[in-house]
Amino acid sequence: MSGVGKGIATASIGRIIQAKGYHVNPIKVDPYLNVDAGTMNPTEHGETFVLNSGLETDQDMGNYERFMGIDLSADDYMTSGMVYKHVIDRERALAYGGKCVEAIPHVTGEIIRRIQKAAENNGSEVTIVEIGGTIGDYQNILFMEAARMLKIKNPQNVIFIMVSYLPIPGTLGEMKTRPTQNAVRQYMPIHPGCAAWPCRWRCSPRLQTRGSAVHQQVATLGAKTLASDPSLRSGQERRATLSTRHWLLSPPFHSPTLVSYSQTEHEEAVERIHASYREAGDRQGDGE
Image: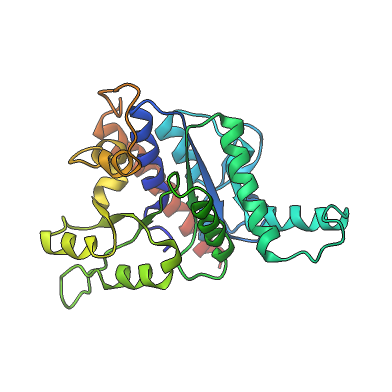
């Protein structure tokens, strides 16, 4: 679901793999029909992050750049609008040779082409694709199908990670894994091998055991941890093995330091970001 922590989890995993010595490029997928984020409602979608190329993108792209210390290009961002527009423009130019243009294989093929192009242009060894939205949404279903096709073509090189929130019903005061279990079953063709669970409290061994019934590996990340010090905390307590062991990646070299900033600096930066959103929400409310 929106705001569960997919962007921060993606940036943190990318930073961990970077620390193992690999060249990583992240890609953000926004399933909206907007051609870029510049025309999306900022109070619903969040402020835009402008790349060096001038493209207005999702703010997760800023997380990627800051956490991983890289500059991203327009190839590293896509929306449904971008993909559909390219397919329709090609159809109008008779690029499909008179074929009946369909969602599968033409739209899914364009998604795969963009992912492969971004990896090639960046010369990356590992590409991390964050697909926005929620399992079961009609908006992102073609991106999920394209990911499934990539897995079929490259079974040893593709892994799926689900970021799923563990809710705490107010009357019970206990975390529940059932929504996550149902989400996995809802899209069994893409069975996630790993899961990252942003949760308010530390998971008990019993919940971890339940998680292992639907995922091969589970990492639990506290909500405050994700907000204040994601790269550092995600690397502790065997978190780094979530990515590297599953892929059987042997590190070319070892970097002992995942982050070079203090927790206080991180918390102050996060508070400034939160304050800007609170002010934006107040202004929106005044306007209504």
